Length: 199
Image (tube, rainbow, N blue to C red):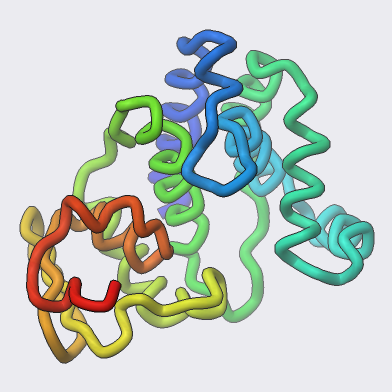
């Protein structure tokens, strides 16, 4: 699974390097983050060590979300081509205790959508990449995203064999279901089913 994450990081770096300055500075799906900030966040995660994460957490006042944002904003001042090179050569970061290895793959998948979909580009990942991440997010998504939009619903992928949960159905492509579980409400228009009520 680390191999898939490495492949997607290389793909992300190649695609973002091919864009122009206006695209790099465009608003991503992450509130307050430009596309280049998303790239910086991926570099930060892929280069992270336990020591660097502890240091950034302290700088962020022991508030994980704030620490992540501060680190990304600082790193995003590095020129994009240099960040792209660093993303390609990064060792892949660390695995936090108690979290499935698929979480690392999910970070690249979700942030690829955050960066590229607002630019009219898809993340260009096969549906099979989303499956292990969907399983991992089903277990740990609430901890990571502070919400669980899938709660009380049955999610059914339409492009690969995957389904989870009980309740009114939400149907869609595996990647769109993954983005829903990651609390990206921008994908709602691409989903269908009675479970969309209230989302």
